[in-house]
Image 1 (cartoon, rainbow, N blue to C red):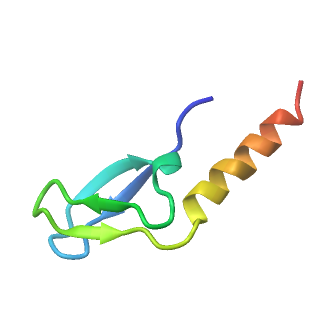
Image 2: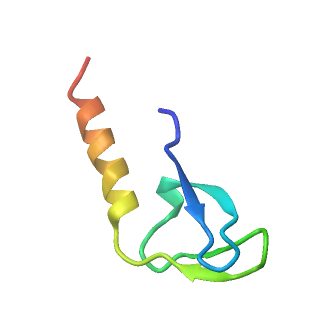
Image 3: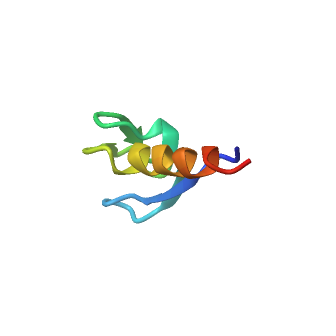
Length: 61
C-alpha cells in the first residue's frame, strides 16, 4: 500500500511541508522545517482515514 501524504501549512510562516498520514497520531508534535514552529496534532482524523482506506482495500481480492 502506498503511503498517504498530508500537506501541512505552518500557521506562522505559511511554508508547506509533507508528512505521512500514518505518522500523524493524536498528540504528535510536528516541527516546521522553515521557521521551527512546533504544532501538536489533535484528534485522530489522519489515522482514522488510513484505517478506513485499509478496511476498504482488505475487502477486495
